[in-house]
Structures are given as C-alpha cells and as structure tokens.
View 1 (cartoon, one colour):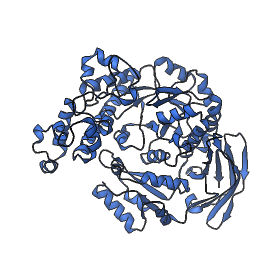
View 2 (cartoon, one colour; view 1 turned 180 degrees about the horizontal axis):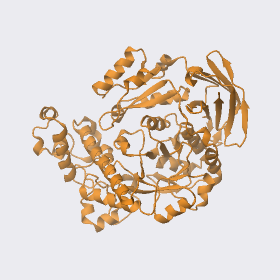
View 3 (cartoon, rainbow, N blue to C red; view 1 turned 180 degrees about the vertical axis):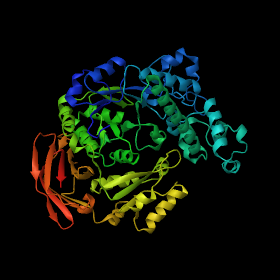
Length: 561
C-alpha cells in the first residue's frame, strides 16, 4: 500500500464515489459484484470476514456452532456486548476460535470471501477468543481448558508450574484454578491481572488465533492460485491485537480518536507510530463511539483534522463516506459524510503522490513502546508520545516485545539514536533489559516520568514559532533527497467546526535531522488548495529556516537540495 493511497472501508453506495475521492483500495469489502465494480474503477478490492460470531440465527439452527461459543467461569455463553441490539433467534454469542468446529467455519467463510477475483482478505475481530479472554471474561469451554493444559505442558517445566500453584499439569483445569480467585464472570474480569496464569492463558489464546489467521491465508491462496494481501482490524496500540501481525500485510482498524473531547487528540497519532515500529501500513478509522459523537454533533471539521494527521504521519484515515456508529443508548447506527466535505481533501493527496510516497519519518529520538508493560497498564510511552508530538519533537517508535508480541529491541539501532525514551522498563526479558542498560551507559536513555523528562532532549531539532497549536512533522525521501515538512494546525474551534488560521509560522530545523544538507529551494502547499507558493529557506549555521505566512488546516513545505 502506498502512503498516498485513499482507502475505503466499505464499498460505496454509488461507484461514482470511487472517482470523486480518488479511491484506490477497498479493504472491508464483500461480494463478487462489488469486487467487479471496483475493478472497473481501478480499485483493489478485498473480501472480508470476521471471527466475532456466527450470529444468533445460525447458532439457533446449528447445534455444533452453539457448542462452539465462548463461555464464562460459570458456564454461561458470552454475548458480544456491542451486538445486543441486533435481535435474532438467539443472542449473538462470541465464537470460540479455539474450538475446531468454529475454526473450520471461519476458514470456510474466508474461502467464500476470496472468490470472485478479489485482491485480498480482511479479517475483522481477528483476535477472536483472545479478545474475549483479555477483557470480557472468557473462555472456559472444554476446548480452551484442554488446549491450555497442553500449552502449559509444552511451554513450562514442572518447577515453574508448581510456583504458580499447578501441582499436576496432566489433570490441570484452568476453570477450577480460577475459582480460587473468582467465581463469577465479573469477579474474574476485575481480578484477572492478579491471577498468576492469566497472562499465559492470553498467550495461549493468541497463539491459537494467530495460527488460524496463518492457516486461512494458506488455504485461501491455495484456493485462488495466487498470493493475496491480508489485513485485520488491529485496534492499535493494544498488544492483544499484535499476536498475528507477522501474517498481515496491512493493519486496518479502529483507533480511539477522542472525539468527545471536542478537539484533536494528542495521543491518537501513537497508533501510526506503533505501526511504523511494526513495519506495517495502517489504514485507520475512528471508533464507533467517536463516529457516533461526530454524527450527533455534526462536526465534519474535526474529522478533517484526523485526515490531515493520518497522512502527515505517513498513513491514512479511511475515507468516511459510510461509518459505523455505536452507543449503548442507540446501538448500531451510521453516519454518511457529505462528499463535498471530504472528497477534495482526499483527491488532493492522490494528485500529489510525490509528496507522500517514499518519505519516511526523520528523527533522532526513539520512543520505546513496551508492549508487555502496556498490556498491564504500566507503560507511559503513549503519554510521552503526546508530549513529544505536541512540541514537534521528531521521534520514531520501536516495539519492545514480550508475552506474545514477537519483537525485540535492536541494540545497535538504539545506540545509533540521539536519545531513547522509555515509559517503563517493567516486564522486559533479560536481553532487552541488557540493551537498555547499554543505552543508559552511553548516556542516551531518558526515562519518562512526565514533561519534566523532556529537558533531557534539549535542544530540539525542530523549533516552531508560535509553538501553540502547531505540529511540525519532518519526513525525508532518501531516494530524491527531498524533505517534506508537514505543518498541522491543531487550533480547532468547536463552535465554528474548523481551525483558526495561524499567521506568520516560522520553522527552524537542525541540519543534522536533514542529513547535514543545505536546501536552496522550497515550495509550500496549502492542502487542499490547488496553488503552490515558493518559499525562501535560509541557512543559519547548523539550521535551516523558513517562514509560512499563513497556516490553515494543513500545509506541506517541501525542501529540495
């Protein structure tokens, strides 16, 4: 996927929208007719399935499917909480991706979805039972009990198991084990992190769903006779979503954009940085409750700030032509934006691909996303990311793995950074701890305890005046030598539903961030205006500076050698 691609979540109500937006990809598609229409418009179209549920009507008709749902510690089936308003013959119970029958059901649905000439497959709710187990109180079905017993036997020694209260792994029953700590679903949810085997249980469930994703990819590619692109609804930065990313070409999912705050979020961009750390493109959308707030308050202008942010960070917010909304009061409902509000913005990106494709984050500061600590609520990297971005500190993200996230810190790469920021050193294995020790010994480690920690990052490579409500993001193209400086206006006015223009924006960049080069030519683009304006960069010692007379929603200043 190109950085300049415009992505639709769903096929549009009318194919004219493909051309209006410059759409190049549909990730969450369905049906051979829709696929054929997309191809006629030059659009790559993926089929889609989900692991979430077989729906209540099918559960009522198929006893085997009904026996393949997630159950809680009391033996009760678990209903998907955001599908309670979809009334069917039975509640919409969570399907268990550990059970062989449901796994085969998902595989068959995937094979059906890739028929008809689609370019790939998208899997919604790909975490399956792992998601249910991580926060919803599942799953204690017989398949999970037996599977977890085998997992413990294969991965842990007798002494380690004895330390957590497992005397005989051959007769071990996780449900009985949990009842020492909790006897109801709510008690289990509340106390889960205090249960010694909770994390290994999640790792077991994630191993199962990841193997299902891998099996589905192999089966589908064998069925169609060629390779397919694969994406999944990865709600970054949640670590439960990262157990199968190696099998995915694209991350595609909901991100909490904090719409109810009535302003652009300082931390929502962190999902894009984590995607960078995983070396995967992200096609994002807002959460269902974000879209519900937008629909209820009619604030397309706030959404425009989300679009600008996504492309400025090297990814993309899927075009909001038809968006799923959810609240507990209204249940599922939809918001369809006005084409004239968004098509010019997206179309502009496709008409200026040379400003996006091939550009990468430039930054000497590295932020460590400690995934195992984050899952346990012990990592402050997201907080640090919000401060860094809002002060235009150019940073890259790396992922510290653990549990089920198969990433490891690269010692050589971190020692080559100017500074390395960590929000937590908890839960890391010995090798990654040793890497951070080496970084600390080199005088480059900054442990984030709050804004006061940022003093260790001075002087900043990028200085912006005025600093309030302006984010600067520097992206470099190693092939052309060009540098694109994205300037985002964060001064959103809720009442006016738009940003307040900012006059006389001045940017100064340390040349070390630019490969030490001097730049004689610069061009300013005010997105989505058709005009471009020359800018005169100045060289002052070790810094390159330029001035922008006015910043509206989003400008890109391209520096050329």
